[in-house]
Length: 125
Image (cartoon, rainbow, N blue to C red; front, side):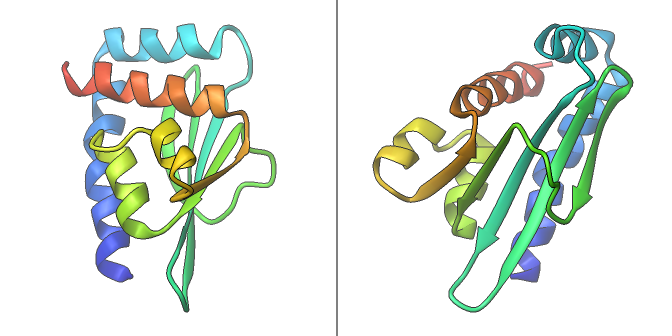
């Protein structure tokens, strides 16, 4: 599971760096936040005998990745490491994985779909 944890960080750190270094990326985030305090996107990654929790906090000042479960998230995606990594890499789509019952969602699915679109835009920068 530790390898998957490192892979999640490797996927998200360039996104975080782009948001902090490019005003266009931060502008996309600010438009998504729309004057609110921020957005919290979380993941609960499960194997048969282990669970890890991560969350991204988006606010007008940027974004940060934290380990652990956030108590008041906008969306929490729960699934096995391969599914969650596929969603984060853009190889899988949250709505399709939900229909196939490979991921479970707590919270607002719409935020997860918007988050995937934002990741795609920021990766292109």
